[in-house]
Length: 540
Image (cartoon, rainbow, N blue to C red):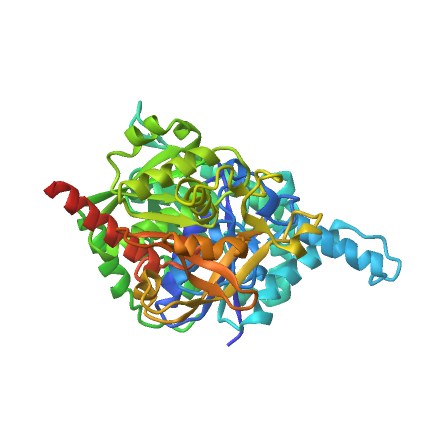
């Protein structure tokens, strides 16, 4: 069959949930036996989000092939259970860079370069790029931003043209809007949706399906009104009511006929849906009544999206053990005083220190790790969280006063964390770290081996600094052993502390590979340790 293209736009306001809408439709169509991939086109000028402040953009999601991408790709992967690539996320920056590079090479033979057709043609090529890595039946493309934003116009023009290029029978436009509820009058108002669709139609795109975000269900009368003013069949108006649990969304959208109407409009052969395993997961999520508390000590805790994949991976581990995971968000900058640190962390069942960059909050993270180590609380350090665990151990167990990472102190007498020689000559910050999937060989008998059940795994990375091999033996002799190695350069990937309830630091980002119905092994075991710790503390 010819590849089908679905484009999802958003109107009224930002953060409507276009990404979850795209991910949910992907899951629903995959449940009907179609192969699906999802991509995000972002209008900002940055080449990728890799150099952006997490407070502005949230998490940077890393793909297997080392792409630094929008956090929505994490939702895509978790919902459709497919590994995506760097070709699943393009920005205006990438598009314009490609066009300018071609112009500098002389590819355009002296033409005047314009938004139309050169930039729009490049956007269309980007949309088709995913087919070069893997042939799929359906490509779902989410357009970032909101209709009416000036920076989105080239993308909207490109997808308008796409219907002519791919054939109208192979293209579907879905518009996500907001239907606000006015409590004072007890009414849902459709006018914002009408104006949003009018704006989209003025660009030349008539939506085939409208997804309406709302607090309460839309009545048939309201759907009829939207149908009349937006020139669309009533059955193509999908009610996306707010839900308590994220993974309920695909089930609710299927009840609204979202996948059925999409298949009908794309002339796709009807196939029976198999969503039973997803429904079983939702039933588990909705029935959780026991919980464990995990403290996350980080520097971006004021924007939870900075750690969205970690939050979801913790939840996945909780689902496996039939436990709700209550997260206690802790700004590591507030843990500089150890006595206060012990008060803040006294009530948690486990502690996690996530990745990050820069010196702010580092001493607070080190104090949190010391508390976990000295009080036998389960500890999980990810990327920088592993590096901080090594620094804490070197200072407080090995007695190496002033031990540090050369990232934070170039003159430290004990650079237990250091930068690789090839990284020292790198001037550009974007896309120059150890990125993407690398092999990790695991020591038999270790906690990591118990979790994975195998000696060789592959995990995703995003960092420059590594555990300094000059200190590995001293750390091991003192009880912090290296149980995972990247064989290509003999680099430490996993460290564990002996005679501890559960203490592990990993140089990679396991959260990126966790799935709601198949939690990452390390998160599964971390939550198991948190449950055990909570039960032991109850007995004391």
